[in-house]
Image 1 (spheres, rainbow, N blue to C red):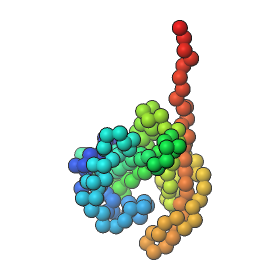
Image 2: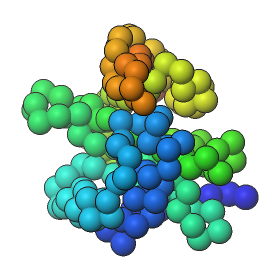
Image 3: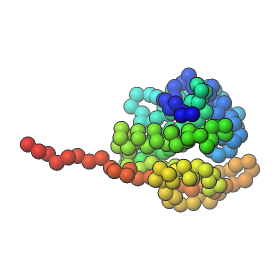
Image 4: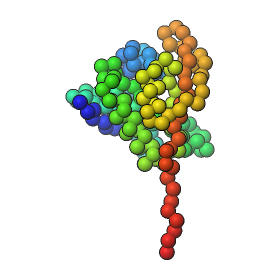
Length: 177
């Protein structure tokens, strides 16, 4: 079954809280247990503010939100406007069904063809082999290993920092008169 990909809205807050409340999901991310619907409502509302380059997407199977993904500004520094951070979360029951691939394709298309993003960055735990394979499929390369990056279930774990440069950066045709 092909997932439906669409922009997330504040109405998806309950679905985000449910997805991010799954130990299989938050254990693979920097999320915390017991997420609140109110927090997700605020985050989704703020991310959709005019002038923000952020993009939050959801994937649905049979009308149910089973995954989310997003692009976010890499920071406030003006000299980093060319870079975006990427994040993907796929519920356990939807893994291995092309959902992550569909979300990654949508994010890369948006970054490449609509934002003019030169560099997409992410971090991923070194033991999340499925996610690393997905990111490599879209041209991401490991740029480094971050030792003791995050606390997960009482242990510090390592993460890779990965990035993808635009495969065909936009240009402008020579002027012709």
